[in-house]
Structures are given as C-alpha cells and as structure tokens.
Image (cartoon, rainbow over all chains, first blue to last red; front, side, top):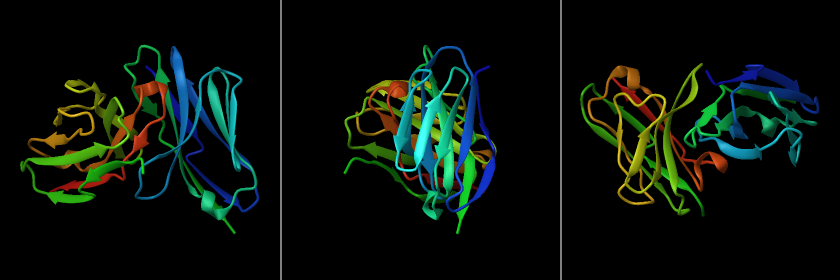
Amino acid sequence: EDQVTQSPEALRLQEGESSSLNCSYTVSGLRGLFWYRQDPGKGPEFLFTLYSAGEEKEKERLKATLTKKESFLHITAPKPEDSATYLCAVSLTGGGNKLTFGTGTQLKVEL
Amino acid sequence: EAQVTQNPRYLITVTGKKLTVTCSQNMNHEYMSWYRQDPGLGLRQIYYSMNVEVTDKGDVPEGYKVSRKEKRNFPLILESPSPNQTSLYFCASSLWGGRTEAFFGQGTRLTVV
C-alpha cells in the first residue's frame, strides 16, 4: 500500500534554531512530491514541487530536497510567523492524478 | 485574484437532512477534487473530476455525491448526512491533477448532529 509518513508529528523551535522536517514515502512510481503549509482554520497553501531525486528548491527560509525514498523540508533561522502545519503529498504515475497526503508536522516557533 | 471559493464556511445540520457544499474556481483549471481532513488521518480524497461531466471516486467516497456540469463549479452533495461525516472539507483545483500544484479553498467545517 502506498504510504506517506511525516516526522516528527510536532516540533517546537526557538526563533533562529534551524531544523528539518521529514517526509518518507513507500510508493511505486513517484510522479511528484509536494509540500504545503497549512495555518489553523485555513486551506493548505502550496510551497514546492519536487519531481526527481537530487532536486532542491528554496523559498526564503525554506529549502526542500528529495531523495528516492524521502524528502526534507529544511527551515533555516525560523521566525514565529513560520509556525504552521507542514504537509507533504505525493502524486503517483498511474495514480489517477490523486495526491496522497501525510498527516503533517505541526511546527511552533517561539521567541 | 486566483482563488477557490467554498460555501458555506461553517455548517451544523441534523442527520439525514440533505446538504450541498459549493466550490468554484476562477483559474480555468481542468482538475478539481474534494478532500476531508480529520485529526490523525490527514487529508483524504473523496471525489475528483478531470473535466466537465467526468468524475470519479477517491479514497473515501461513501455517502457523498458530486457533479461537474460547468468547468468552474464542483459541488459536494451529502444526500443523507450522518455524524461520521462531521469533518473539515476542502475543495481543490489544479491545472493538470497530480502533475501540478493544487489550490485549496478555505474549508467548510461541517457538524452533523
């Protein structure tokens, strides 16, 4: 069965304390891996798409990387406004264009 | 502004009373889908549509119906809601399904009593 697992479930950081979130997947035929940010009471907001192992993308304090079995979302010198739930999703070849989501990592950045 | 609009944002209803949650997108996207989000289970796809008049089941379709008569609209219908359908619902659209990023609506929090 195709699975997407995110870790940790929750993470508390001090402002400026860099860390990484993990998304591991056991699927056959990855078409794309997506990272989203979700604020409480709101819909997920797109961050990155990664298509092949070795690919990296950056946006402000966030950097996403992809290997054959997992993706990392690196957060450098986080600020309180980075507090949110970060969701990972995969799309599979032959998967009917569906996104399969992990359960997310809830990040809280404190002053 | 590019957006996906869902209505209503909040809804409390009673078991068995038919309801419809509307979804509209203004990006001319081909692909639209509905998800429900439950604690500990994440986002799960209910139904999706690859184009007008083309719809198909996702992972948790039981108890739901959809229609796609126009490209921009994709309503979610609960013919006879039950308490286990209490959840947070999201509509999403994308240009080419799983190959491109999805844009999500603000969500509809449904409570069935």
